[in-house]
Amino acid sequence: MLEALVAAAPGTTDPQALAALARGKLTRKRADLEQALTGLVGEHQRCVLREQLGHLDDLDARIARLSAELEERLRPFAPQLAALDTIPGVGQLTAEVSLAELGADLSRFP
Image (cartoon, rainbow, N blue to C red; front, side, top):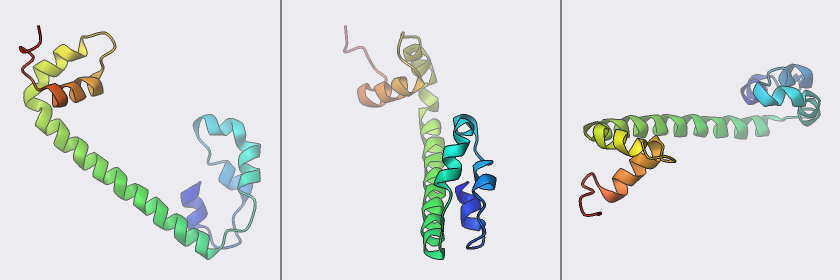
């Protein structure tokens, strides 16, 4: 919806068409979306929104690069992560954080 709002020419936004782009749980709130999307969106708002969406895209790309780096660095510790993941209530992320904080050698803990 936001990308469509940015791409639309000033004064040509159709609240019903924009609300129809809703996905997931938002589809049940179509009337509220139409009301929220009614109004004038000027070039200034489009410019700011375009910049914000670009910033989010940049952050998503950075997160993807860091996730790939983390995955590569954790590869040698796959057996330890798998063992930690067997503990009830410990998922992959908690296992990764525990490994980062405590290290792979847990022999110091009785």
